[in-house]
Image (tube, helix red, strand yellow):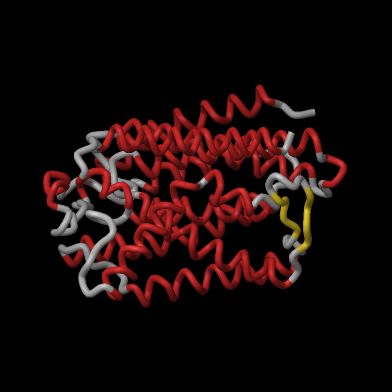
Length: 331
C-alpha cells in the first residue's frame, strides 16, 4: 500500500531542512567569497554580479539527508541515482570553483566539461544496459518497449542533453529551480499512477516507490532553496546545482522506464537547448545573423521587455500543463 502520509512528511521535511541549510550554507559561501561572475554581454544582469553561487549544495545535501532518513525497503536504484547526480555535482563544483578563483566566467573549458559529462554518461549507460534498464514506457501508446542496445545509446544522449539543457535553463532567478521542482513533483505523480495501474509489469515495486519518494524529496528541497533563489535571488545554484539537477532528473527518468516522458514534461529544458543550437548554427551559417535577440530563449523574452518573474511563471505553467497531459495519458 502506498503510504502518502509518509511521503508528505518526507516532502515537508525536505523543504524545512533545505531552508535551514540555506541559513547555514549561504553565509559560509559568502565568507569563502563564492560570488557569481556575470557574463559581460548579459548587460541587464550586471547588478547580479557578486551574488553568492554554488547554492546547489543546499538542495543536494537536503535531498540526500531526507532520502536516507525516509526511504524504506530496497533503494539500490535510488542510491545509484544519487551517486550519479553527485558525480555531476562535482563537475559543476569544479566549474564554479575555477570561475571564482579566476575572477571571470571562464571555468572548465568546453572540452573539459564535455569530457567529464561523457565519462559519467557512458559509465551510467553501460550500467543501465547490463542491468536491463532498456525497457521504456512509450507515451500515449501505453506500452513498454525494450530498445536493447539502442536503449543504451538513448540513455547516453539523454544524460548529455539533459545536464546541458538544465544548465542552460539556469539563467533567471528561480527559473531552473522553479521548473525543476514542478517537473519532479509531476514525475512523482506519474510514477504513482503507473504503480497503481501497471504494478503487475513492475518487478521491483519497492525500488520504484523509493525513486518516486526521491522525486518528491528533491522537489521539496528545491522549494526550500527557492526561498533564497526567487527574484531577486540571494544565492544562485551555479553549475554545482544545475548539473546535479540534470543528473538526478535523467537518472530517475531512466530507472523508472519513463525516459521518453522527459522531453515532454521537461519541454522548457528542450526549448533552452534547441534555441541555443539554432542560434549558434544560424550565426555561423549566415555570418553573424541571429534568430533570437539572445539565447537561451528566456533571455530573448527578457530583451523583448518581459520581466524575469513573468517568464519564470510562464515556464512553470508550460511545465505544469505538459506534466498533467502526460499523467492523464497513462490513465
